Image 1 (cartoon, rainbow, N blue to C red):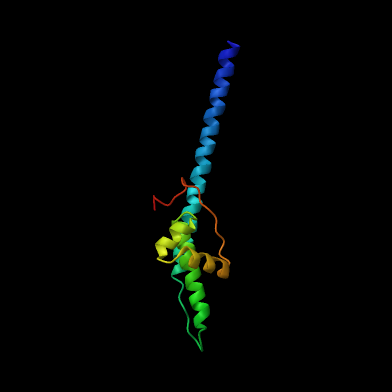
Image 2 (spheres, rainbow, N blue to C red):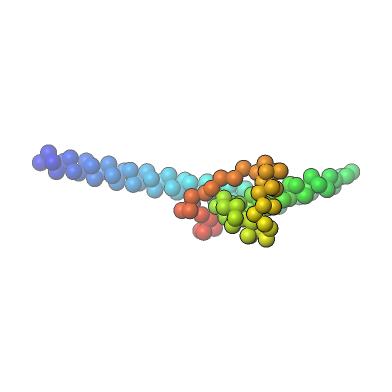
Length: 115
């Protein structure tokens, strides 16, 4: 009888652990979706021209947002990102360094396929 109770206890613990893992994965997915939505909203940035505009600063902002969005889509892969943007890997890498864009690989199972 004790062994049966022990097995039931282990099974109950495993179910609880599986539910917790599922909830953590769901939270990760939600976070990734929110990050994506934030980047999309940021891409609708409206330039307000008053007296003058720093052209090169605006180009830098645009390129930074575009690279960040492409990196997110490519789950952090610089090679894939360069292909999406139609530029060489070296060009992308130099822009990432110049603009100090943080690059983090996103695990494969946390994609935006559902969006």
